[in-house]
Length: 510
Image 1: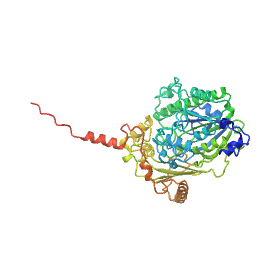
Image 2: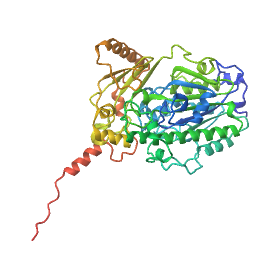
Image 3: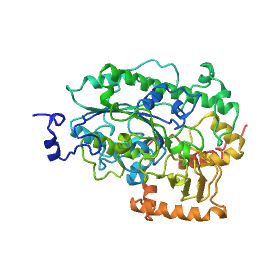
Image 4: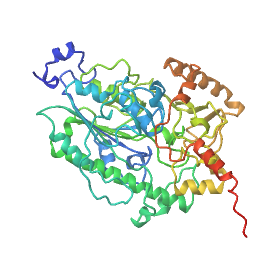
């Protein structure tokens, strides 16, 4: 019995597959190498103009392919973003998988399974989908594919993973049948915290070279923390480079669609897990020699949910009817830079519960709309604490020297990162790309707020978002499936009551 990889085109059409609609009909089905970092900010790469973080591998892929200036995730947290990548859907369309440490249900088709059915060898190494529960949702393996995690290495930093991702990739390639196309997911665990304290200083990096964003205090604590983050970004880029070397050694580099991106912004206050530009905007470079012209820069708005329909189209597989993303093939095949598809100029972002630390395990529901000029943020429950309650430690912000300094100082940066927020926030991004000047309350922008709020509501309703349809309570009912470790509000409250108990009476001395 021939494999699907070797069936003629007519047979593929009969079995529900279709030839690519943009690239030449006789174009080969490419291999797909998808490489994703964990917590890497969009503008921390050399090709984006950053001179204090070295990313030669990412820069190479961008130079030899296309660099995307406006790639977004619909939800800036690990597992919701990755679920969106795999399913081609926005996270509010994924039920419990919208929440961090939630359940990922197999009722949602994922592109690795679809490609496997079409004859591809599919696998992953490092961080696939997670954290959360996929087995309870009906998946027999990680939704990103069969896991290859056998090899270890001795990394140069104490706080990074010791998985040898490139060696694991080499094992995967060894399992291929001759000429079989493959789809492989490489997920680093970096630059997720924790970091090796002052690793950047010991490596010779200079705090004065760091560019500190406006929402963080410009001091030595923050600059050193950013240098430690830079070290882990550079380690991530090195891992990607080693994987490319494996691909070249196998003679498959030019036959492979290479994609490098991240799941959300850096793990600093007001970034990771928050609905501001640096939280949901991602680095993205894509290479496919002979099909994607080298050195192009694309300004169109794209979303991680666009990856799945892109991979399927290039593999000659029909887009799954569940998928709401749009294929990127027109952007990849274009011969010019700049704006390619005029209607790719609006993006929706949002979140529900990320981490525990509020009463009843409540989340902090947000939806936002991003246009060429503005970001409008709708905070549905403004009376709640956006990063988690103070008494439980602001759990939707990773612990760090930067976080500790801001919490202890209790100044304007505390208000930006941890303070309560109004129902609506409006930022004019040309003047305020770091989103620190909220214009929503200004009378001169009332018309802009009303227009964008209406458009946001209309688009969310069209996507059947329960939050926009008046059933947002469904998101509050989904259970948090991670280890609690005393970090939940109820655990904190129980500990406080225990502390408040009067001491047991002691017998009086004789």
